[in-house]
Length: 427
Image (cartoon, rainbow, N blue to C red; front, side, top):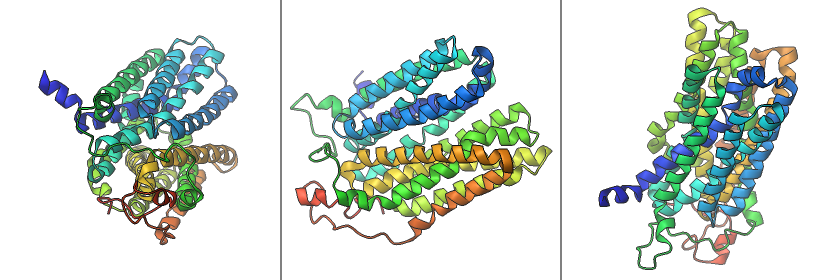
């Protein structure tokens, strides 16, 4: 029994449960909307126009959730986890039980807030439960949960469709269980009420973290904000029209679903490379991972000209590369903001992920207009160029903010500097 409780309080258990929560809120809830949409439309009479408005509303509510995480997660990460579970779990359960477009749309929009809340909450929980040297790799593993979630969604689609209601009922159950596991494995939070308990390796010190960051903090984040916007805009083509591209190229429906699974498998593979990526400076990790996204997007655009086995092979390889590159790139964004100001890493994650999703909204709208005139292939080529443009700012040496002379938390002036030397273990 003691060994069981010891495992529940271990960093590995927190990383595992955090990965499961990301898998649920992103892969099974937020990103599964497009996967199940055709069957939903047929079942409840949801038109293409309303379906597009639901997708737009979901992006807006995701940003609202991430902004709420910006305010809540630095000091109350467990509360943010509870809110993530309530919005994602209840929202997707409402989707499963809905009988008409209105109820389905409201539930779908609400469910997207869970992903926005979960990311900054888990950034803070990982920080306060793990040492600085281990936190970067752990963050990459947790963030890679999107991949397993996408794989699970694809498997559910293959097994259950057209029964999309059961698939989303399963997603609701997994979300609740994953959130409960995160709360049980948060050693620092569980130990806080007991004065005699030993302190966590990185005790939470939130002085100044609840206020709006100072101007130098925002100035130091200009480049990660820019590249997050470009990644979001360029990746929207794959997320929105990836299956459409394959269908237009003559691929059967089964292949388009299997390609989705390959995309998720690529994202899950980030866990295998997280240790190596965690040793790199954030800008180096970003340059490599964003380049892979650009290459994979270009490859999919060119694959539209292929047929038969060549199309199948190209689609699966490019989707797997895209899944790995996109998931790893979002992890590099987390590392980047942590290097700039570790105390405000949860807030930085919220800001960067909001910008990422806003970029996806803009990119999806632009791609939707361009597809009607240029076709999906050229749109994917243009999207690859947009992602590649996001690599350029990371290649240039950043303008340094004043470094903190002592501990990152030792003085108000050091905190106000916004961006100092990167913590040990990140280079």
